[in-house]
Length: 364
Ligand SMILES: [Zn+2]
Ligand SMILES: [Zn+2]
Ligand SMILES: [Zn+2]
Image (tube, rainbow, N blue to C red; front, side, top):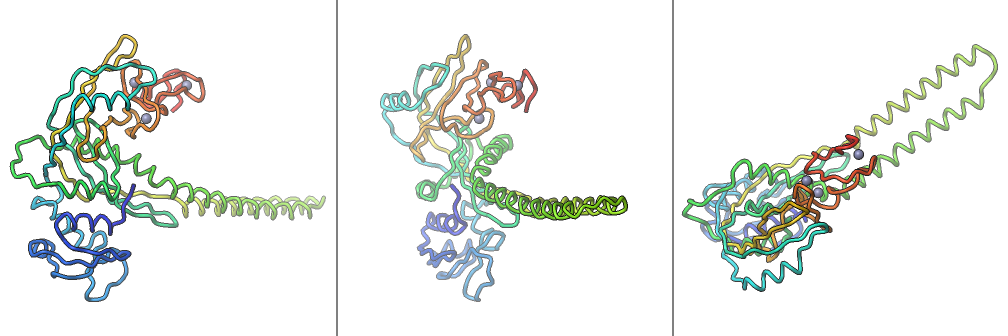
């Protein structure tokens, strides 16, 4: 789910004991002294995250405002790339294993649980600002939790984010592993399909409007041509003239259609605003998945922040697996869309094994 900038700002401020009240795009606040210093704001005030021109006593808090940039300093003094701790969750291991047995199943493979142990795990809480621009504009902040240890992603709603923020503590001793560029690439890779699914309504409304306008243009020029052909005469000279007229109508129509295509063309921008690295202890359940003669060991953690299993994303499309989970002959974990029959030749194949290209007929 995607939050508005106002909600994200309010959550960050609340986690640092700022008293506040949200009113549309505005936040009325009372800030403690340390926060006033870091953010360079007065004790009381009004923040506004809309792009409108503000009164003198309102602090602009839209993207790219000085306030928003300084807000990221609150994660800690290291700015956008802060490192934090989250308390471990005490769980009964037998109970947890039972819970997983009730939750997990594969369509074409079996698994058994080997052991459950507490391990240190690393998460990244990532904030992305996105903007989709076409004839209309849609923007927002996408917040998601990426697990380096278990290769899972979860898009966070406002409430989940608040719960996590409330319990984060700054980490002083930075000896543990941190997220590297490779992890961030995987996280960004996973963010893209999530973003496309968030923009689904926006893009389908766009294509609906494009189709509607294109149909109108086509039918207008179609009736023009019909009118002309009704007047058709047998004189050769007129026939030539008619051909030229039809040619002119066709090129004007194509020009109008291209114009519409560029009007409705969509560009998407997404940039990371902040990354909070979270260290915590997680109960990790080691499984062996068996598919035909092959087997593979996989660990599934119980996320102490979201109180749910960190299940790996589909290894072909990087999306969370929603319905049925398949294991291919090479033991990739894939969703039903990525383990499917080719629409052209009906060959069943795994998209992680063949880079989304059918191995029999080459269809992409
Ligand atoms: Zn998939
Ligand atoms: Zn595969
Ligand atoms: Zn095929």
